[in-house]
View 1 (cartoon, rainbow, N blue to C red):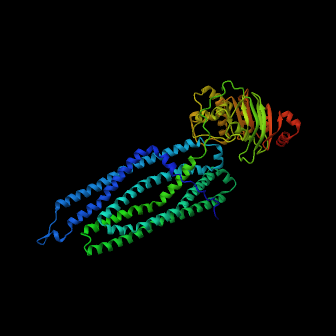
View 2: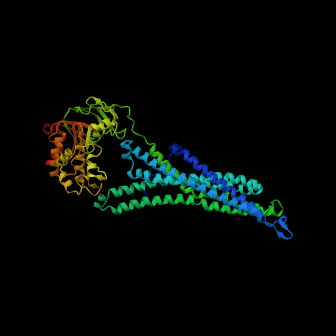
View 3: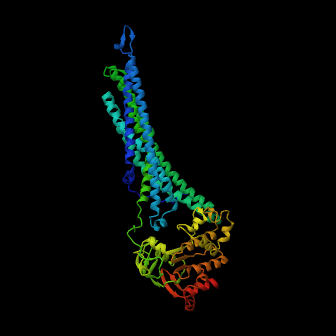
Length: 595
């Protein structure tokens, strides 16, 4: 079985965005780089000291006096101390540089997560409707961590390697230009190996991160849907689906790692050939007297190691660098997604203590797909204080209409007025303060029950809170909790579906907004509890303009006005009695529930 995963689209490289986001850390970054360069310089000086030390202890003819090899121990001691000093300074510079660099990269990663958190709250809902939750989580966790690890490992490596190559290149030519040319001949071969490997492996690493996001999305979907999976005995199917995607991910990862892994043995092979060539040429030069001493050969072997090492390190780290590049593309592609327009310049247009609650829909048109309208030329006027029911078959556009009223989506054309003010002229924050919402989809946070009910409000009166608990039939449940309202609850396990819905109803009642939207607000509670809550809802909606979406028509019989929708249009309007007398769609839906 093969996984049905689409190959990712080619993404624009986000290196420029990465550099721009990193700018607040330029000063400590430069300090760490300077320390790293100093460390590399001291490392480059070490072979020269080794060469001088070797020459001092090599028994050359001019150092033999009366058959005795004379050693200048003062020079040997000075070279030895110099060698130790260079090694120590190289270590100290490298250690401090590594500490500073790792610190700022971890802070940078924290900043990225904070930016993503802020970004999520600025993005339109349609992004979340069209993107898998697991893929978004993969960006926040896996991709940010991968980018952080790549920066941590590759930045210092690339700087160190560049400085080392230049410094050793110069030192080799100073020591012996003939042997330097032998080493330089290997450089084009190594660069070609690195270039070809990167060219082949980078697209695979891009796909690797994309497929990893899809695998995470599948895991999240399977985790959140365990009840349905078990209820329909779909465990085997889900295991097969995950196995197919996981196998595909393994295949992509294997190919990328296999190609990236070829670079290290190839570089080692070229290195050994270079060592052999240097030794052969050095032996010939020493034999004909071109090289003055063994110290040059000894030092040059160290130079060759230092020259080959940076390229070998780049080869070894190529997989990390390429994974980091792919993760960088995904992180900054997310951060560059379209945001909701800023509305800081918009002032409050309505006095929230004196809102009448008149709502008018003027030729409203909307489609999730611009080529296919869900709502077409919807018009209607709601008088202040009316309880308006919106009913219709599934897909008629009921919830969409409410989403437009709250500006969760923007109108394609037409307008909606609240007390004569266009919602386009109002800020989203002001508009959403006007409406209290109780949705069919319940949502609770990990925290105390009080935090879930009060949520974003401050200074809520305790007596009013107790009244709300009584009205929503939550008082008995709260009395059974060890710490009452201050008991910690867990999102999934502590509350039943019905209790969660009662909490969301209590939350809306606590907010006490001038107008209300109820979208299947009692769908998860039993009939008896629904009757009790309905009394509280009647009290809550009294004197307030409210929009009620319900499939149980028994809950809306007492509505002041009913909109009957079909295919995005209002096909009938009136009260329960007038619509029943009309004998149209409403009558058909009502009779289907009670006959």
